[in-house]
Length: 464
Ligand SMILES: O=C(O)Cc1cc(O)ccc1O
Ligand SMILES: [Fe+2]
Image (tube, rainbow, N blue to C red; front, side, top):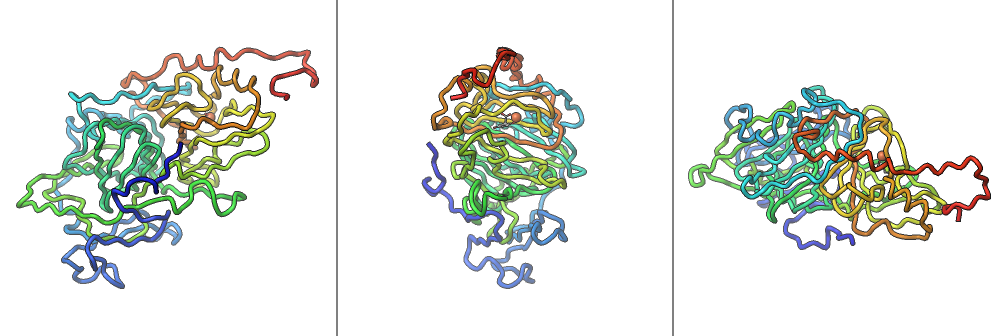
């Protein structure tokens, strides 16, 4: 069953809408009236602009936020390359997949990624591993895909990526995320987007967490055009939620905890020390914000006559490239829904694609795979690499009676689909020890059913 976000106990407040210009203040009157940068801001705050696009980006793309904060973000020590202790788990492959990454067209499937043990506790940064990527953040073309597994909250540590926007897909365990904009709570079957540059800190309040991250090196995630679908449907703008301003005022004299800022810059990690909490924004306004979305709010559209519709119909968010309709990355889901198509092979079809398809499973069973694709695992089908339903799915789908039914009620698979060719990291291919060596057997048992004497009158199970 789906649980809508507005049924949840309201632990934090949110602002609704996608791409809105929001205003939020944690203290009354903290936002300057009628201007962005007064000579002296209310409450003695400093004004600071965070630009998500070039100053001169077209108006419909232009994204920026004004912060009113206790100290400017610039108040910190110089950045140093991250030490081994921090980089131990993120290792050399961390989002630098191009340097030592591996090229392979083979179908890849990963068993669920291991959760950290209590003896080897990790926070979100320490538990992040790079799986695959393409392009280069320096030239702002490409993407990176990560998996995180963590079992402790980030202490006095904040992370930001200068390289791109992060779309985080929790698979196991709730995350409570402190950002410069306020707090976001996100559970499995919800997603959160933290755009480039925004500092955030991840808490894992209820034990081990696991999930996936998609980082795009240029552009921002947008809602897909709806074309003939009309003005409503798929992910509706009103269901996206941004935080409200909430500040933490650590006084270095009374609370001398040192904060560590972790910067991801050109695929590498750097750290800087500062004596105050980076989440000290008392008020903000703008349209460049982190946000969350509950996948149960997705209004799916599909065929009510015959044939399997391409999965682009389940696009939640897209990051466009310069080529129309050809995304740097689409975030696509496979939600629980009714299936009613007649005289149709209902599961995902066999195909070879002019795109890369990275998939993960949040819960349940994916409609194209009866065996081996498990929650917390992943698969990668690269450009032109043949793939499709496994042998058991084919057997069941060709024999079944095509009554209206449900695509399993408790299921949520997703896909990061990209027009770029991915390379995989050494950690993904060998280091994590999760690659399923027998994945290709998913298809080997598909029988030959060709009958040269077949006539249109021959009775086949699917002709009914
Ligand atoms: O490969 C996959 O499982 C993803 C996928 C799903 C679908 O419904 C149609 C095409 C497709 O690539
Ligand atoms: Fe596919």
